Image 1 (cartoon, chains in turn orange, red):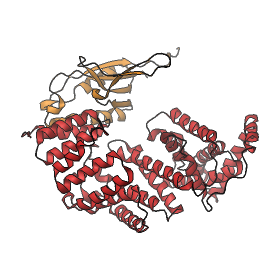
Image 2 (cartoon, helix red, strand yellow):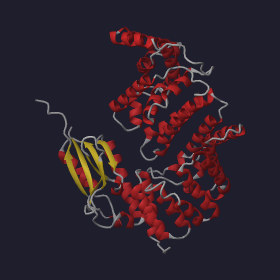
Image 3 (cartoon, helix red, strand yellow):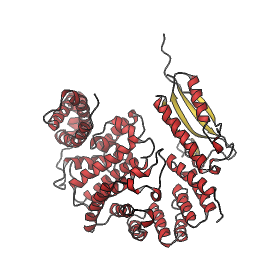
Image 4 (cartoon, rainbow over the protein chains, first blue to last red):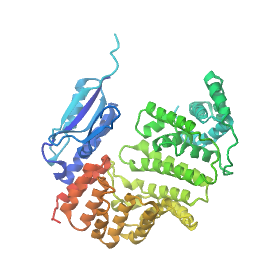
Length: 132
Length: 408
C-alpha cells in the first residue's frame, strides 16, 4: 500500500486558537484525538506528530570545512505560514489519503465551524512496484 | 500462542540472574547478553505451548550457554576470547557481597555511557525486555534501538569496565549513576503517561520494579529507598493525572479519590524509614515533597509551609534552577504570588526561554488576579513547550483567562 504524508500548514488565517473559547478549543483537540484513534483503528495510521512552535525553530546550514554549523532563528519573520505537524498514513489509494486530509481539514474552530486548514499531501517514496 | 504475563514476569526476574552466571563464566558481557536474549525469546516461544520446565532458571542458563558456546566456536569469537584472556588480571579488591543483578546494573549504568544508551542497555540486560519492546516504548524503529544497544556494549568493552564489584571508594558514585538512570526511565514513562501512550506507562512500572530490586539488594541505603518512595508516591497519582481524552489534569484539580492509596502508604513507610537514617539526599527530599502533596485530601489542605522547607533542602542539595522554580511556587503559596514572582525573575537567565518559566508566571499572576498578564504568559509558555499535552493544557489556560480578562 502506498504511504502518504499529510503536512499540516498553519497559515495564520482566521482567529488564532488563543482567542477561541475554552469549549471551542476543547472541541478542536477532541476532534484531533478522535481522528488519530479512527485512523489507528482502520490500520491506516503510521505516525502522527505535532511540531513544537516556530519560536523554537532554527535554520541550520553547513558552516564550511572544520567550521561549526551556522544556526539562525527561523523561520524568517516574513514567513506567515509554518509546518504545524503531520500524519503519515498507509492507505490503499491516493483518493483515500485525500479523504483523510479533507477530514483533518474539517477540524472545528470558532463556533464549531470547520477551520479549512490547508493540508499538503505528498506520496512517500517506497519500494519499486512488483512486476505483474 | 501469546505470552501470558506470568511467564513474562518470571523471565524478566530471571534475566539478570542468568546473565550474571553467563558473564561470570565467559567474561564477555556483550556475547553473554546476546545469548541470554536469544534464550529468553526461545523460552517465551516454547514454554506456553510445550509446558514450563521444572527448573526455569537452569533451562535458561543451559539454553543461553549453548548459544554462547556456538558463538565462541566461531573464529572471530575465538580471537576475541584470546584477547580477553589478557584482561583477567587480579582486580582491585571490590566491595564484597554484591549480587549479580547489582553488578549488571552498575555495568549497564556505567558513567562512560550516555543516559540514552544506559537506559536502553539496562532495560534489556537487567529488565529482560526485548529490543522490540524497548523500541516501542521510546517510539523509535527496532533497528535504531538494536544499534543503540550494540554501541552501548561496544562502549563498555572499550572503556575497560569489568563485571566485578566496584571498590569501596567507587561504589557511591557508581550507585548514583544507577539511581539516575532508573529515575530517568521512570520520568520518561510518567511524563508521557497521557493519552494513547500505553506502551510508555510500562517504563514507569519497569523503573519501579528495578528500584525495588536495588532496594532489596541494598536495604540500608537511604537514597535507594528515597528513590523508590519517590516513584511510588508519584505513580500513585497517575490514575488522576489525565482525563478521558488524555488531557493533563494539574495536581490542584485531580480527583484525589482516584489516587492509589496503597502505593502512597508504602511510599510513606519507605520514606519514614529512610529519613530516620539521617543521610538526606535529593531523592528523599523530593519524595518528602511528593508525600506532603499526597497527604492532602484536598488541594487546599496542602501543607505548603513544610513543602517549602523541603524545597529549601533540595535547593541546597542540588543547586538546580528547576528546583528553584518549584520553590518559587511554594514561596508564593506561603507568602503570596508577588513573593514567588520576585524569585522567578531571578531565574530568567538560568532558565532562559524554558516554557516552565512562563507556565509558573501565568499561574502566579492568575493568583494575583492579573488575568490578562497571566493569559499572555500561558500563551508564551504554550509556544515554547515541546510536549503536546502541555501545549494543550497551557493553551486551555490562556483561552480560559482570555475570556475574562480584567487587566493587571
